[in-house]
Image (cartoon, rainbow over all chains, first blue to last red; front, side, top):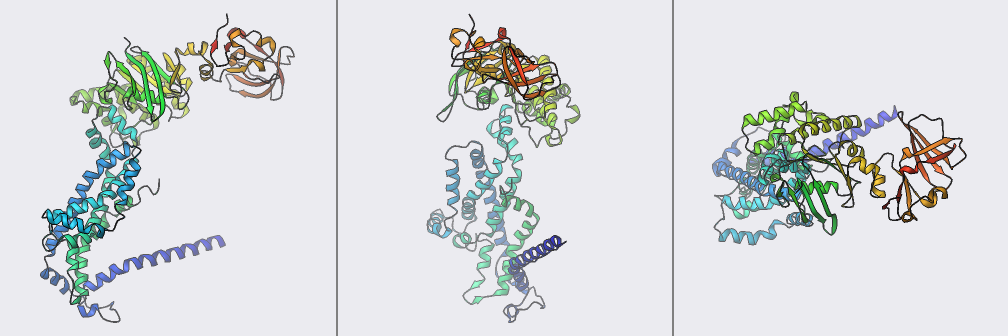
Length: 276
Length: 345
Protein backbone atom coordinates (compact mmCIF):
# COMPACT_ATOMS: atom_id res chain seq x y z
CA UNK A 1 0.00 0.00 0.00
CA UNK A 2 2.77 2.46 0.96
CA UNK A 3 4.65 1.56 -2.25
CA UNK A 4 1.55 2.58 -4.24
CA UNK A 5 1.20 5.90 -2.42
CA UNK A 6 4.94 6.63 -2.84
CA UNK A 7 4.58 5.91 -6.55
CA UNK A 8 1.54 8.21 -6.78
CA UNK A 9 3.39 11.00 -4.96
CA UNK A 10 6.37 10.71 -7.30
CA UNK A 11 4.05 10.68 -10.31
CA UNK A 12 2.24 13.77 -8.99
CA UNK A 13 5.49 15.68 -8.45
CA UNK A 14 6.73 14.72 -11.91
CA UNK A 15 3.44 15.77 -13.53
CA UNK A 16 3.40 19.11 -11.73
CA UNK A 17 7.04 19.74 -12.66
CA UNK A 18 6.44 18.83 -16.30
CA UNK A 19 3.45 21.13 -16.51
CA UNK A 20 5.39 23.89 -14.78
CA UNK A 21 8.28 23.68 -17.24
CA UNK A 22 5.92 23.51 -20.21
CA UNK A 23 3.96 26.56 -19.06
CA UNK A 24 7.20 28.43 -18.46
CA UNK A 25 8.43 27.64 -21.96
CA UNK A 26 5.07 28.40 -23.52
CA UNK A 27 4.52 31.64 -21.59
CA UNK A 28 6.50 33.96 -23.95
CA UNK A 29 4.46 32.72 -26.91
CA UNK A 30 1.24 33.11 -24.93
CA UNK A 31 2.17 36.68 -23.97
CA UNK A 32 3.09 37.44 -27.56
CA UNK A 33 -0.34 36.22 -28.66
CA UNK A 34 -2.10 38.36 -26.07
CA UNK A 35 -0.02 41.48 -26.74
CA UNK A 36 -0.66 41.29 -30.50
CA UNK A 37 -4.34 41.99 -29.80
CA UNK A 38 -3.75 44.89 -27.34
CA UNK A 39 -3.33 48.59 -28.00
CA UNK A 40 0.16 50.06 -27.34
CA UNK A 41 -1.09 51.50 -24.06
CA UNK A 42 -2.54 48.21 -22.93
CA UNK A 43 0.69 46.48 -23.96
CA UNK A 44 2.81 48.56 -21.54
CA UNK A 45 0.30 48.83 -18.69
CA UNK A 46 1.33 47.96 -15.14
CA UNK A 47 0.10 45.61 -13.80
CA UNK A 48 0.07 43.60 -17.08
CA UNK A 49 -3.43 43.02 -18.44
CA UNK A 50 -4.83 39.54 -18.87
CA UNK A 51 -8.39 40.66 -19.52
CA UNK A 52 -8.89 43.38 -22.13
CA UNK A 53 -10.89 44.23 -25.21
CA UNK A 54 -8.95 42.78 -28.15
CA UNK A 55 -8.23 44.80 -31.25
CA UNK A 56 -7.02 43.98 -34.77
CA UNK A 57 -5.57 47.45 -35.44
CA UNK A 58 -1.96 46.20 -35.05
CA UNK A 59 -2.36 43.66 -37.79
CA UNK A 60 -3.83 46.13 -40.25
CA UNK A 61 -1.07 48.63 -39.44
CA UNK A 62 1.62 45.99 -40.01
CA UNK A 63 0.05 45.21 -43.38
CA UNK A 64 -0.23 48.93 -44.29
CA UNK A 65 3.27 49.85 -43.14
CA UNK A 66 5.08 46.98 -44.75
CA UNK A 67 4.41 44.43 -47.45
CA UNK A 68 3.82 41.35 -45.27
CA UNK A 69 3.09 39.17 -48.28
CA UNK A 70 6.42 40.04 -49.92
CA UNK A 71 8.37 39.11 -46.80
CA UNK A 72 6.30 35.97 -46.34
CA UNK A 73 6.89 35.00 -49.97
CA UNK A 74 10.65 35.52 -49.52
CA UNK A 75 10.60 33.41 -46.37
CA UNK A 76 8.76 30.59 -48.14
CA UNK A 77 11.01 30.68 -51.22
CA UNK A 78 14.31 30.87 -49.36
CA UNK A 79 13.33 28.20 -46.80
CA UNK A 80 11.89 25.76 -49.29
CA UNK A 81 14.56 26.13 -51.96
CA UNK A 82 17.45 26.03 -49.49
CA UNK A 83 15.95 22.87 -47.96
CA UNK A 84 15.49 21.18 -51.34
CA UNK A 85 18.98 22.17 -52.52
CA UNK A 86 20.47 21.07 -49.22
CA UNK A 87 18.81 17.67 -49.43
CA UNK A 88 20.04 17.23 -53.01
CA UNK A 89 23.60 17.84 -51.83
CA UNK A 90 23.42 16.14 -48.45
CA UNK A 91 21.76 12.87 -49.50
CA UNK A 92 24.53 11.66 -51.86
CA UNK A 93 27.18 12.84 -49.37
CA UNK A 94 25.51 10.96 -46.53
CA UNK A 95 25.07 7.89 -48.77
CA UNK A 96 28.76 7.73 -49.61
CA UNK A 97 29.79 8.22 -45.98
CA UNK A 98 27.32 5.66 -44.66
CA UNK A 99 28.05 2.91 -47.19
CA UNK A 100 31.56 3.58 -48.48
CA UNK A 101 33.36 4.43 -45.26
CA UNK A 102 37.01 5.24 -45.38
CA UNK A 103 39.37 5.87 -42.47
CA UNK A 104 38.72 9.60 -42.91
CA UNK A 105 34.91 9.44 -42.80
CA UNK A 106 34.59 10.23 -39.09
CA UNK A 107 37.11 13.07 -39.39
CA UNK A 108 35.15 14.60 -42.28
CA UNK A 109 31.90 14.39 -40.32
CA UNK A 110 33.49 16.02 -37.27
CA UNK A 111 35.00 18.75 -39.43
CA UNK A 112 31.60 19.46 -41.01
CA UNK A 113 30.02 19.69 -37.59
CA UNK A 114 32.82 21.92 -36.31
CA UNK A 115 31.83 24.59 -38.86
CA UNK A 116 28.59 24.98 -36.90
CA UNK A 117 30.52 25.79 -33.75
CA UNK A 118 31.82 29.07 -35.12
CA UNK A 119 29.48 32.03 -34.46
CA UNK A 120 27.93 33.31 -37.68
CA UNK A 121 29.24 36.81 -36.98
CA UNK A 122 32.77 35.48 -37.51
CA UNK A 123 31.98 34.85 -41.16
CA UNK A 124 29.86 37.96 -41.68
CA UNK A 125 32.45 40.23 -43.26
CA UNK A 126 33.78 37.79 -45.91
CA UNK A 127 30.31 36.61 -46.83
CA UNK A 128 29.00 40.17 -47.02
CA UNK A 129 31.88 41.16 -49.28
CA UNK A 130 31.34 38.08 -51.49
CA UNK A 131 27.62 38.85 -51.78
CA UNK A 132 28.37 42.46 -52.62
CA UNK A 133 30.93 41.57 -55.31
CA UNK A 134 28.50 39.07 -56.83
CA UNK A 135 25.68 41.65 -56.76
CA UNK A 136 23.64 39.38 -54.55
CA UNK A 137 22.89 41.74 -51.67
CA UNK A 138 19.18 42.06 -50.92
CA UNK A 139 18.33 39.04 -53.10
CA UNK A 140 16.65 35.74 -52.35
CA UNK A 141 19.57 33.90 -53.99
CA UNK A 142 22.05 35.16 -51.38
CA UNK A 143 19.91 33.77 -48.58
CA UNK A 144 19.25 30.50 -50.40
CA UNK A 145 22.99 29.92 -50.79
CA UNK A 146 23.82 30.88 -47.19
CA UNK A 147 20.94 28.88 -45.68
CA UNK A 148 21.85 25.82 -47.76
CA UNK A 149 25.49 25.92 -46.78
CA UNK A 150 24.88 26.65 -43.12
CA UNK A 151 22.33 23.81 -42.76
CA UNK A 152 24.35 21.35 -44.85
CA UNK A 153 26.42 19.92 -41.94
CA UNK A 154 23.26 19.19 -39.94
CA UNK A 155 21.59 17.64 -42.98
CA UNK A 156 24.57 15.44 -43.75
CA UNK A 157 24.83 14.29 -40.13
CA UNK A 158 21.13 13.52 -39.81
CA UNK A 159 20.92 11.69 -43.12
CA UNK A 160 24.14 9.80 -42.39
CA UNK A 161 22.63 8.59 -39.15
CA UNK A 162 19.38 7.56 -40.85
CA UNK A 163 21.12 5.86 -43.77
CA UNK A 164 23.42 3.92 -41.43
CA UNK A 165 20.31 2.17 -40.11
CA UNK A 166 19.51 0.80 -43.56
CA UNK A 167 21.10 -2.67 -43.87
CA UNK A 168 23.86 -2.49 -46.47
CA UNK A 169 22.91 -5.96 -47.74
CA UNK A 170 19.77 -4.48 -49.27
CA UNK A 171 21.89 -2.18 -51.41
CA UNK A 172 24.24 -5.06 -52.24
CA UNK A 173 21.21 -7.11 -53.29
CA UNK A 174 20.22 -4.28 -55.62
CA UNK A 175 23.73 -4.28 -57.06
CA UNK A 176 23.56 -8.05 -57.61
CA UNK A 177 20.17 -7.54 -59.30
CA UNK A 178 21.85 -5.28 -61.82
CA UNK A 179 21.19 -1.81 -60.40
CA UNK A 180 23.61 0.97 -61.33
CA UNK A 181 24.70 3.40 -58.62
CA UNK A 182 21.96 5.87 -59.55
CA UNK A 183 19.28 3.14 -59.68
CA UNK A 184 20.43 1.83 -56.30
CA UNK A 185 20.16 5.35 -54.88
CA UNK A 186 16.84 6.25 -56.49
CA UNK A 187 14.92 2.97 -56.35
CA UNK A 188 16.15 1.48 -53.09
CA UNK A 189 17.88 3.97 -50.82
CA UNK A 190 15.57 6.97 -51.25
CA UNK A 191 12.30 5.07 -50.65
CA UNK A 192 13.83 3.43 -47.57
CA UNK A 193 15.31 6.69 -46.35
CA UNK A 194 12.16 8.75 -46.97
CA UNK A 195 11.42 9.08 -43.26
CA UNK A 196 14.89 10.41 -42.59
CA UNK A 197 14.75 12.73 -45.59
CA UNK A 198 11.37 14.09 -44.48
CA UNK A 199 12.40 14.73 -40.90
CA UNK A 200 15.72 16.25 -41.98
CA UNK A 201 13.97 18.47 -44.50
CA UNK A 202 11.35 19.58 -41.99
CA UNK A 203 13.93 20.49 -39.38
CA UNK A 204 16.00 22.46 -41.85
CA UNK A 205 12.88 24.19 -43.17
CA UNK A 206 12.15 25.39 -39.63
CA UNK A 207 15.78 26.46 -39.10
CA UNK A 208 15.81 28.43 -42.37
CA UNK A 209 12.45 30.05 -41.65
CA UNK A 210 13.57 31.22 -38.24
CA UNK A 211 16.97 32.38 -39.39
CA UNK A 212 17.43 36.08 -38.65
CA UNK A 213 21.14 36.97 -38.63
CA UNK A 214 21.86 36.55 -42.34
CA UNK A 215 18.45 37.92 -43.34
CA UNK A 216 19.10 41.12 -41.41
CA UNK A 217 22.64 41.55 -42.69
CA UNK A 218 22.33 40.53 -46.33
CA UNK A 219 18.85 41.77 -47.22
CA UNK A 220 16.61 44.78 -46.89
CA UNK A 221 13.36 45.73 -48.58
CA UNK A 222 13.42 43.48 -51.64
CA UNK A 223 14.95 40.22 -50.47
CA UNK A 224 14.07 40.47 -46.79
CA UNK A 225 12.31 37.66 -44.97
CA UNK A 226 9.82 37.81 -42.10
CA UNK A 227 12.76 38.17 -39.70
CA UNK A 228 13.55 41.47 -41.43
CA UNK A 229 9.89 42.47 -41.03
CA UNK A 230 10.00 41.89 -37.27
CA UNK A 231 13.29 43.75 -36.86
CA UNK A 232 11.84 46.80 -38.64
CA UNK A 233 9.50 47.31 -35.67
CA UNK A 234 12.49 47.98 -33.40
CA UNK A 235 12.67 51.66 -34.31
CA UNK A 236 14.77 54.56 -32.87
CA UNK A 237 11.55 55.90 -31.29
CA UNK A 238 11.42 52.84 -29.10
CA UNK A 239 9.77 49.45 -29.13
CA UNK A 240 6.14 49.36 -30.21
CA UNK A 241 5.32 46.24 -28.30
CA UNK A 242 1.85 45.65 -29.65
CA UNK A 243 2.82 46.11 -33.27
CA UNK A 244 6.01 44.14 -32.71
CA UNK A 245 3.97 41.32 -31.26
CA UNK A 246 1.54 41.43 -34.16
CA UNK A 247 4.39 41.35 -36.69
CA UNK A 248 6.06 38.50 -34.80
CA UNK A 249 2.82 36.54 -34.67
CA UNK A 250 2.36 36.97 -38.40
CA UNK A 251 5.94 35.81 -38.91
CA UNK A 252 5.79 32.71 -36.78
CA UNK A 253 2.19 31.62 -37.36
CA UNK A 254 2.81 29.72 -40.62
CA UNK A 255 5.76 27.75 -39.29
CA UNK A 256 4.06 27.02 -35.95
CA UNK A 257 1.01 25.61 -37.74
CA UNK A 258 3.24 23.66 -40.12
CA UNK A 259 5.31 22.35 -37.22
CA UNK A 260 2.17 21.33 -35.31
CA UNK A 261 1.05 19.08 -38.15
CA UNK A 262 4.50 17.61 -38.73
CA UNK A 263 5.60 17.32 -35.11
CA UNK A 264 5.84 13.51 -35.25
CA UNK A 265 8.36 13.64 -38.08
CA UNK A 266 10.23 16.53 -36.43
CA UNK A 267 10.63 14.60 -33.18
CA UNK A 268 11.78 11.54 -35.10
CA UNK A 269 14.41 13.59 -36.85
CA UNK A 270 15.57 15.28 -33.65
CA UNK A 271 15.87 12.04 -31.69
CA UNK A 272 17.62 10.00 -34.39
CA UNK A 273 20.02 7.48 -32.99
CA UNK A 274 19.08 8.29 -29.42
CA UNK A 275 17.18 5.06 -28.93
CA UNK A 276 18.00 1.89 -30.82
CA UNK B 1 38.86 -24.72 -68.98
CA UNK B 2 36.49 -25.07 -66.03
CA UNK B 3 33.18 -23.21 -65.88
CA UNK B 4 34.25 -21.02 -62.96
CA UNK B 5 37.96 -20.65 -62.34
CA UNK B 6 39.67 -18.93 -59.44
CA UNK B 7 43.37 -18.38 -60.16
CA UNK B 8 45.58 -17.26 -57.31
CA UNK B 9 42.91 -15.01 -55.81
CA UNK B 10 44.26 -12.53 -53.25
CA UNK B 11 42.45 -10.09 -50.97
CA UNK B 12 43.90 -7.59 -48.53
CA UNK B 13 42.09 -5.58 -45.89
CA UNK B 14 44.72 -2.97 -45.13
CA UNK B 15 47.82 -4.95 -44.16
CA UNK B 16 45.84 -8.07 -43.36
CA UNK B 17 45.99 -10.76 -46.09
CA UNK B 18 42.49 -12.20 -45.88
CA UNK B 19 42.60 -14.48 -48.95
CA UNK B 20 45.95 -16.08 -49.75
CA UNK B 21 46.36 -17.26 -53.31
CA UNK B 22 43.20 -19.39 -53.65
CA UNK B 23 42.96 -21.68 -56.68
CA UNK B 24 39.74 -23.51 -57.45
CA UNK B 25 38.01 -24.96 -60.51
CA UNK B 26 34.25 -25.44 -60.53
CA UNK B 27 32.42 -27.42 -63.21
CA UNK B 28 28.96 -26.57 -64.59
CA UNK B 29 26.10 -27.80 -62.43
CA UNK B 30 28.27 -28.49 -59.40
CA UNK B 31 27.07 -27.72 -55.87
CA UNK B 32 30.16 -26.43 -54.11
CA UNK B 33 30.13 -25.68 -50.40
CA UNK B 34 32.66 -23.38 -48.74
CA UNK B 35 33.00 -24.40 -45.12
CA UNK B 36 35.26 -23.36 -42.30
CA UNK B 37 35.39 -21.69 -38.90
CA UNK B 38 34.45 -18.03 -38.38
CA UNK B 39 36.99 -15.71 -39.92
CA UNK B 40 38.38 -18.28 -42.35
CA UNK B 41 37.51 -16.15 -45.39
CA UNK B 42 34.63 -18.17 -46.85
CA UNK B 43 32.20 -15.22 -47.02
CA UNK B 44 35.00 -12.95 -48.26
CA UNK B 45 35.75 -15.41 -51.06
CA UNK B 46 32.06 -15.55 -51.97
CA UNK B 47 31.86 -11.76 -52.02
CA UNK B 48 34.94 -11.61 -54.25
CA UNK B 49 33.22 -13.95 -56.71
CA UNK B 50 30.02 -11.86 -56.45
CA UNK B 51 31.91 -8.62 -57.11
CA UNK B 52 30.89 -7.05 -53.81
CA UNK B 53 34.58 -6.79 -52.87
CA UNK B 54 37.48 -5.98 -55.18
CA UNK B 55 39.96 -8.71 -56.03
CA UNK B 56 43.48 -7.55 -55.19
CA UNK B 57 45.36 -10.26 -57.04
CA UNK B 58 44.80 -13.16 -59.41
CA UNK B 59 41.89 -13.53 -61.75
CA UNK B 60 38.40 -14.93 -61.97
CA UNK B 61 36.90 -16.39 -65.13
CA UNK B 62 33.34 -17.50 -65.71
CA UNK B 63 32.40 -19.50 -68.80
CA UNK B 64 35.57 -18.34 -70.54
CA UNK B 65 35.04 -14.66 -69.69
CA UNK B 66 37.40 -12.78 -67.37
CA UNK B 67 35.13 -11.15 -64.79
CA UNK B 68 37.82 -10.16 -62.29
CA UNK B 69 37.10 -6.45 -62.42
CA UNK B 70 33.54 -6.45 -63.72
CA UNK B 71 30.86 -4.88 -61.47
CA UNK B 72 28.42 -7.29 -59.79
CA UNK B 73 25.60 -6.29 -62.09
CA UNK B 74 27.52 -7.51 -65.16
CA UNK B 75 28.70 -10.89 -63.87
CA UNK B 76 25.48 -12.86 -64.45
CA UNK B 77 25.43 -14.13 -60.88
CA UNK B 78 22.64 -14.13 -58.31
CA UNK B 79 23.09 -14.09 -54.55
CA UNK B 80 20.96 -15.18 -51.61
CA UNK B 81 22.01 -13.30 -48.48
CA UNK B 82 22.06 -14.52 -44.89
CA UNK B 83 19.69 -11.75 -43.86
CA UNK B 84 17.54 -12.29 -46.99
CA UNK B 85 18.08 -8.60 -47.95
CA UNK B 86 14.58 -8.26 -49.39
CA UNK B 87 13.43 -4.78 -50.40
CA UNK B 88 11.06 -3.92 -47.53
CA UNK B 89 9.14 -1.30 -49.50
CA UNK B 90 8.29 -3.72 -52.33
CA UNK B 91 5.84 -6.60 -52.50
CA UNK B 92 7.02 -10.17 -53.05
CA UNK B 93 6.17 -9.83 -56.75
CA UNK B 94 8.13 -6.58 -57.00
CA UNK B 95 11.09 -8.07 -55.13
CA UNK B 96 11.23 -11.00 -57.51
CA UNK B 97 10.72 -8.90 -60.63
CA UNK B 98 13.15 -6.10 -59.71
CA UNK B 99 16.14 -7.51 -61.59
CA UNK B 100 14.04 -8.28 -64.66
CA UNK B 101 12.62 -4.73 -64.66
CA UNK B 102 16.13 -3.31 -64.49
CA UNK B 103 16.96 -5.52 -67.47
CA UNK B 104 13.98 -3.96 -69.30
CA UNK B 105 12.27 -7.29 -69.91
CA UNK B 106 8.68 -7.05 -71.24
CA UNK B 107 6.00 -7.08 -68.55
CA UNK B 108 4.44 -10.32 -69.86
CA UNK B 109 7.78 -12.14 -69.71
CA UNK B 110 8.41 -10.82 -66.19
CA UNK B 111 4.98 -12.00 -65.05
CA UNK B 112 5.53 -15.46 -66.51
CA UNK B 113 8.98 -15.89 -64.94
CA UNK B 114 7.92 -14.62 -61.51
CA UNK B 115 4.81 -16.79 -61.44
CA UNK B 116 6.83 -19.85 -62.46
CA UNK B 117 9.39 -19.27 -59.70
CA UNK B 118 6.64 -18.53 -57.18
CA UNK B 119 4.97 -21.79 -58.11
CA UNK B 120 8.18 -23.79 -57.58
CA UNK B 121 8.68 -22.15 -54.17
CA UNK B 122 5.02 -22.19 -53.05
CA UNK B 123 4.93 -18.40 -52.92
CA UNK B 124 1.96 -17.81 -55.23
CA UNK B 125 -0.49 -16.86 -52.43
CA UNK B 126 1.98 -14.31 -51.07
CA UNK B 127 2.91 -12.35 -54.18
CA UNK B 128 1.18 -9.16 -53.07
CA UNK B 129 2.46 -9.23 -49.49
CA UNK B 130 5.41 -7.20 -48.28
CA UNK B 131 8.36 -8.87 -46.53
CA UNK B 132 7.24 -7.78 -43.07
CA UNK B 133 4.04 -9.78 -43.54
CA UNK B 134 6.00 -13.01 -44.14
CA UNK B 135 7.58 -15.56 -41.84
CA UNK B 136 11.33 -16.20 -41.83
CA UNK B 137 11.02 -19.28 -44.02
CA UNK B 138 8.80 -17.46 -46.53
CA UNK B 139 11.24 -14.56 -46.70
CA UNK B 140 14.06 -16.98 -47.39
CA UNK B 141 12.06 -18.51 -50.23
CA UNK B 142 11.42 -15.06 -51.68
CA UNK B 143 15.18 -14.42 -51.56
CA UNK B 144 15.75 -17.68 -53.41
CA UNK B 145 12.96 -16.86 -55.87
CA UNK B 146 14.54 -13.49 -56.56
CA UNK B 147 17.69 -15.36 -57.61
CA UNK B 148 15.91 -18.08 -59.61
CA UNK B 149 13.96 -15.71 -61.90
CA UNK B 150 17.23 -14.34 -63.27
CA UNK B 151 18.43 -17.79 -64.37
CA UNK B 152 22.02 -16.75 -63.61
CA UNK B 153 25.12 -18.73 -64.54
CA UNK B 154 25.96 -19.27 -60.85
CA UNK B 155 23.90 -19.09 -57.66
CA UNK B 156 25.68 -17.78 -54.57
CA UNK B 157 24.30 -18.57 -51.12
CA UNK B 158 25.79 -16.81 -48.11
CA UNK B 159 24.77 -18.81 -45.00
CA UNK B 160 21.11 -18.67 -46.04
CA UNK B 161 19.85 -20.91 -43.24
CA UNK B 162 21.64 -19.25 -40.31
CA UNK B 163 18.66 -17.12 -39.32
CA UNK B 164 16.15 -19.98 -39.33
CA UNK B 165 15.21 -22.20 -36.40
CA UNK B 166 16.47 -25.78 -36.38
CA UNK B 167 13.30 -27.39 -37.76
CA UNK B 168 12.96 -24.88 -40.58
CA UNK B 169 16.66 -25.14 -41.33
CA UNK B 170 16.35 -28.87 -41.97
CA UNK B 171 13.26 -28.39 -44.11
CA UNK B 172 14.76 -25.58 -46.19
CA UNK B 173 17.97 -27.53 -46.65
CA UNK B 174 15.98 -30.31 -48.28
CA UNK B 175 14.17 -27.78 -50.48
CA UNK B 176 17.48 -26.27 -51.62
CA UNK B 177 18.80 -29.74 -52.48
CA UNK B 178 15.63 -30.52 -54.46
CA UNK B 179 15.81 -27.18 -56.24
CA UNK B 180 19.39 -27.81 -57.27
CA UNK B 181 18.43 -31.21 -58.67
CA UNK B 182 15.56 -29.65 -60.66
CA UNK B 183 17.44 -26.63 -61.97
CA UNK B 184 20.91 -28.16 -62.27
CA UNK B 185 22.44 -24.73 -61.72
CA UNK B 186 26.04 -24.21 -60.63
CA UNK B 187 25.90 -23.23 -56.96
CA UNK B 188 28.38 -21.96 -54.42
CA UNK B 189 27.10 -22.21 -50.87
CA UNK B 190 28.82 -20.80 -47.80
CA UNK B 191 28.15 -22.26 -44.37
CA UNK B 192 29.87 -22.81 -41.06
CA UNK B 193 27.59 -25.82 -40.47
CA UNK B 194 29.33 -28.96 -41.60
CA UNK B 195 26.07 -30.95 -41.59
CA UNK B 196 24.80 -28.63 -44.36
CA UNK B 197 28.13 -29.09 -46.14
CA UNK B 198 28.00 -32.86 -45.95
CA UNK B 199 24.38 -33.18 -47.04
CA UNK B 200 24.23 -30.59 -49.85
CA UNK B 201 27.62 -30.60 -51.50
CA UNK B 202 28.92 -32.34 -54.57
CA UNK B 203 32.29 -31.10 -53.35
CA UNK B 204 33.30 -29.34 -50.15
CA UNK B 205 36.00 -26.69 -49.93
CA UNK B 206 37.41 -26.46 -46.40
CA UNK B 207 38.98 -23.09 -45.67
CA UNK B 208 41.18 -21.87 -42.85
CA UNK B 209 42.89 -18.50 -42.50
CA UNK B 210 42.18 -17.51 -46.09
CA UNK B 211 43.57 -20.73 -47.61
CA UNK B 212 42.04 -23.91 -48.93
CA UNK B 213 42.89 -26.86 -46.69
CA UNK B 214 41.21 -29.51 -48.80
CA UNK B 215 38.71 -29.92 -51.63
CA UNK B 216 36.80 -33.15 -52.06
CA UNK B 217 33.47 -34.90 -51.90
CA UNK B 218 31.89 -35.01 -48.44
CA UNK B 219 32.86 -38.67 -47.94
CA UNK B 220 36.40 -38.09 -49.18
CA UNK B 221 36.82 -35.41 -46.54
CA UNK B 222 35.27 -37.66 -43.92
CA UNK B 223 37.26 -40.80 -44.78
CA UNK B 224 40.52 -39.26 -46.03
CA UNK B 225 41.10 -35.84 -44.42
CA UNK B 226 44.32 -34.24 -45.61
CA UNK B 227 45.26 -32.92 -42.19
CA UNK B 228 44.22 -32.75 -38.56
CA UNK B 229 42.28 -29.52 -39.05
CA UNK B 230 40.02 -31.02 -41.73
CA UNK B 231 39.74 -34.26 -39.77
CA UNK B 232 38.45 -32.45 -36.72
CA UNK B 233 36.31 -29.95 -38.60
CA UNK B 234 34.33 -32.54 -40.53
CA UNK B 235 32.27 -34.97 -38.45
CA UNK B 236 30.09 -34.59 -35.39
CA UNK B 237 31.17 -35.29 -32.74
CA UNK B 238 34.69 -34.23 -33.63
CA UNK B 239 37.24 -36.90 -34.47
CA UNK B 240 39.14 -38.09 -31.40
CA UNK B 241 42.72 -36.87 -31.80
CA UNK B 242 45.10 -37.96 -29.05
CA UNK B 243 48.78 -37.34 -28.74
CA UNK B 244 50.72 -40.62 -29.00
CA UNK B 245 52.26 -40.04 -25.57
CA UNK B 246 48.75 -40.21 -24.06
CA UNK B 247 48.13 -43.62 -25.58
CA UNK B 248 49.32 -47.01 -24.33
CA UNK B 249 52.48 -48.30 -26.00
CA UNK B 250 50.57 -51.14 -27.64
CA UNK B 251 48.73 -48.50 -29.71
CA UNK B 252 51.48 -45.87 -30.09
CA UNK B 253 53.95 -48.47 -31.37
CA UNK B 254 51.72 -49.09 -34.37
CA UNK B 255 52.18 -45.51 -35.61
CA UNK B 256 54.16 -45.04 -38.84
CA UNK B 257 57.69 -43.64 -38.43
CA UNK B 258 56.68 -40.18 -39.73
CA UNK B 259 53.92 -39.96 -37.15
CA UNK B 260 56.25 -40.34 -34.17
CA UNK B 261 55.76 -37.32 -31.94
CA UNK B 262 52.39 -36.77 -33.57
CA UNK B 263 48.90 -38.03 -32.86
CA UNK B 264 46.26 -40.62 -33.63
CA UNK B 265 42.82 -39.74 -34.96
CA UNK B 266 39.81 -42.02 -34.66
CA UNK B 267 36.17 -41.31 -35.45
CA UNK B 268 33.85 -41.83 -32.45
CA UNK B 269 32.26 -44.84 -34.18
CA UNK B 270 35.71 -46.50 -34.27
CA UNK B 271 36.04 -46.33 -30.47
CA UNK B 272 34.12 -49.01 -28.53
CA UNK B 273 33.43 -48.98 -24.82
CA UNK B 274 32.92 -52.16 -22.79
CA UNK B 275 31.60 -52.19 -19.26
CA UNK B 276 33.50 -54.31 -16.78
CA UNK B 277 36.33 -55.00 -19.20
CA UNK B 278 39.61 -54.85 -17.34
CA UNK B 279 41.78 -55.84 -20.29
CA UNK B 280 43.09 -53.40 -22.88
CA UNK B 281 42.88 -49.60 -22.48
CA UNK B 282 41.20 -48.58 -19.25
CA UNK B 283 39.23 -45.45 -18.71
CA UNK B 284 36.59 -43.74 -16.62
CA UNK B 285 33.27 -42.52 -18.01
CA UNK B 286 32.96 -38.73 -17.69
CA UNK B 287 29.62 -38.17 -19.42
CA UNK B 288 26.92 -40.15 -21.23
CA UNK B 289 24.73 -38.40 -23.83
CA UNK B 290 21.70 -40.47 -24.82
CA UNK B 291 20.47 -38.94 -28.06
CA UNK B 292 17.83 -41.54 -28.81
CA UNK B 293 19.09 -42.98 -32.08
CA UNK B 294 22.65 -43.10 -30.75
CA UNK B 295 24.60 -42.74 -27.54
CA UNK B 296 27.78 -40.75 -27.00
CA UNK B 297 30.09 -41.82 -24.18
CA UNK B 298 32.91 -39.48 -23.09
CA UNK B 299 35.82 -41.35 -21.51
CA UNK B 300 39.02 -40.23 -19.82
CA UNK B 301 41.70 -42.91 -20.19
CA UNK B 302 44.24 -43.80 -17.54
CA UNK B 303 47.01 -42.48 -19.86
CA UNK B 304 45.33 -39.07 -19.99
CA UNK B 305 43.53 -39.19 -23.36
CA UNK B 306 39.98 -37.86 -23.78
CA UNK B 307 37.93 -40.01 -26.16
CA UNK B 308 34.32 -40.00 -27.38
CA UNK B 309 32.65 -43.21 -28.38
CA UNK B 310 29.52 -43.37 -30.52
CA UNK B 311 27.29 -46.42 -30.40
CA UNK B 312 23.86 -47.20 -31.74
CA UNK B 313 22.71 -49.10 -28.65
CA UNK B 314 21.42 -47.64 -25.40
CA UNK B 315 23.76 -48.02 -22.40
CA UNK B 316 23.49 -48.50 -18.68
CA UNK B 317 26.85 -46.81 -18.06
CA UNK B 318 27.03 -43.73 -15.85
CA UNK B 319 29.62 -41.09 -15.01
CA UNK B 320 32.40 -42.55 -12.92
CA UNK B 321 32.09 -46.10 -14.23
CA UNK B 322 35.31 -47.87 -15.14
CA UNK B 323 35.34 -49.24 -18.67
CA UNK B 324 37.62 -50.92 -21.19
CA UNK B 325 38.13 -49.36 -24.62
CA UNK B 326 38.95 -50.94 -27.95
CA UNK B 327 40.18 -48.89 -30.90
CA UNK B 328 39.56 -49.94 -34.51
CA UNK B 329 42.98 -49.05 -35.86
CA UNK B 330 41.98 -50.17 -39.40
CA UNK B 331 40.33 -46.75 -39.62
CA UNK B 332 43.10 -44.87 -37.81
CA UNK B 333 44.31 -41.49 -39.06
CA UNK B 334 47.93 -40.78 -38.12
CA UNK B 335 49.14 -37.20 -37.97
CA UNK B 336 52.69 -35.89 -37.67
CA UNK B 337 53.70 -33.19 -35.22
CA UNK B 338 52.57 -30.50 -37.71
CA UNK B 339 49.11 -32.04 -38.09
CA UNK B 340 49.72 -33.42 -41.59
CA UNK B 341 48.28 -36.83 -42.35
CA UNK B 342 50.80 -39.69 -42.50
CA UNK B 343 49.88 -42.75 -44.50
CA UNK B 344 50.67 -46.14 -43.08
CA UNK B 345 53.18 -47.90 -45.30
